[in-house]
Length: 207
Image 1 (cartoon, one colour):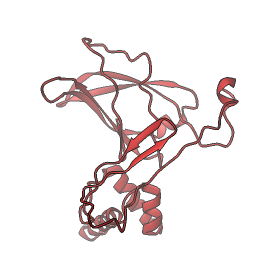
Image 2 (cartoon, rainbow, N blue to C red):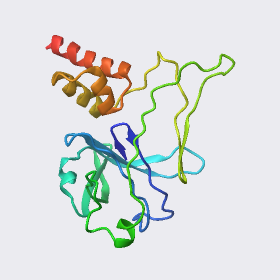
Image 3 (cartoon, one colour):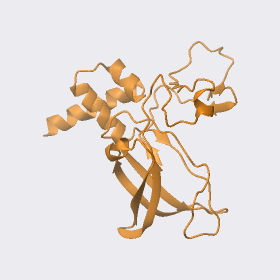
């Protein structure tokens, strides 16, 4: 599943043409704007070669899913090379950040420790000793949850930006948001924001 710069993959169901995930396989994805789109791809897991693409659902508008205050099932048709490739059923629920736990949550959950969302944006590191050699990697530990960043890139190298996120950056710029605000909202590096905005300007001149 791809939503903006976020990517997640499920566990593997072995030896089935109609796989069912009964437990787990739940992911929380941050949505910054109702007009964002998602992409879901289904693969055949291969042990000794590259996984085969079986089908995908592209440009899934997320706005209809944001109305799901309770868990709702959605059936998505899959396509592969222009042909139908089965369907995928997903269950979605929209959560809004709140200082109070929803009443539908079990009491064992609501009376426990506060549940908070920690969002970390890694910008860069400065003034490391010259004896240290790149690339570098940052590891974050929160209680028993561990995460690590991708390996660092030289300042001049900017990773490709998803089309949906770049479009959001351009719309924010047209709404007179500063580059700093756009970087904070989208999670893009300032250089990537400048490239997205510049592309918008070049397209306007072409028209």
